Length: 296
Image (cartoon, rainbow, N blue to C red):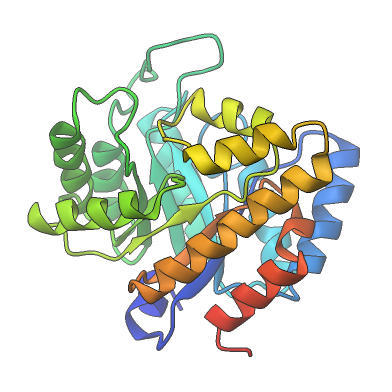
């Protein structure tokens, strides 16, 4: 079953998790251990970010196959425009479908480290909407997800322009939207309202990052615009010399976000765990996610 089929037929919000391809042998071992542990959460689907090259081939496809082998019911590899031509995208997409994958997350991708502006590859795509249209034409049965920025893409002139670009992705064939992280829930609900007002009717799944440190927040803000609530910031700063306490503060904040989002009608919860499986097994967070999945 595809992700959009699950979103349309589920009688409860979905729970999903994002992985990224490990870069070293030690990281691979840690990834596999965490992936095995996370089967205990039984997420409705998982996504896999891109490795080198931007396409869904290589490390992304390999990790996706490993996750499917562990029993995850729906695996969604990411595919970006970074450094790949149309021919390369065609090959990697066809390979993905040939391997039995039915879902793909289509993204423009961030500029390579050290560069401020995105530059398309020779005969590549400049915008995610172009990639979505290409994928939809190439593999019509694919379920295609795209990213939304509740507090605006860093390169967008304003929020109106950003919503216009998002609608272009949906009009090109995207089935649903997963948001980049946010820490104020009103930001998500206002974003959904703006999407609906613009004629975007597909599901909008909130993406959440359980905060574990101030350093993590600073790293994430380098490529994704979001405001940090003053109360959360004050608590993290007060506990900055106690990593365990900082993690607890961030996890409790995530639990409150999840509870309010579900009550407000969000179609699911997507967790950016950054391969930290143990985060999901923090007792209160695991209980919260289990309630969302109707297991308590």
